[in-house]
Image 1 (cartoon, rainbow, N blue to C red):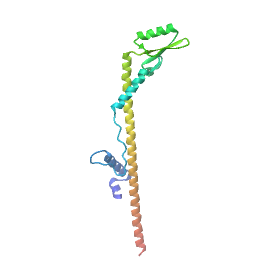
Image 2: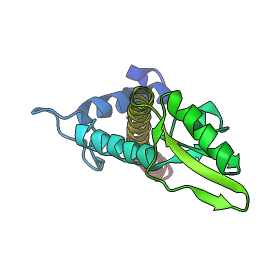
Image 3: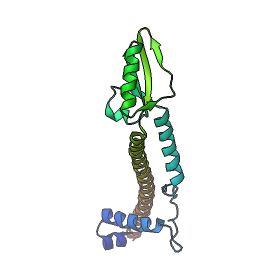
Image 4: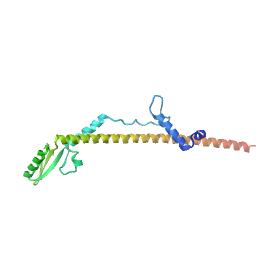
Length: 197
């Protein structure tokens, strides 16, 4: 053990070299097997088109079924296909509805709601606007999916590195303990011999 340390310079560098060796040994190949005593974790998560498509489908359903107030922030409006418009009285409601239809909005399947003199009706965005929204939503879903995948894989790698580092630490401590015991035994043998003269 002492000779190994001397050839590697010091304990820190020795442990770093051992870690590097073990990490290379942990890379799957026909020749390399995982180091003894080290438990390999699951493989890294791979990009899955089916999972991504499912996430996109869920986002599209939320978009199709969703609505928000016409005065909502643009970032919120971009996540839903319908707007809720409130007007005071029936004539005003018809007028506002016609204005939205003239601007390219479409009739919604959601029925109007009346609360006192106020009427809330719903309009659906134009096909062009919906297509642009969905393109942005799908891009965001994929970006989030890839980022989450990368975070999960980084955690897997970090846990594996920690496992292997702990294994190295235990091995080094065992070897140090054996070295100390061997030195103690040698000292005891020498002292016994000297005192027996």
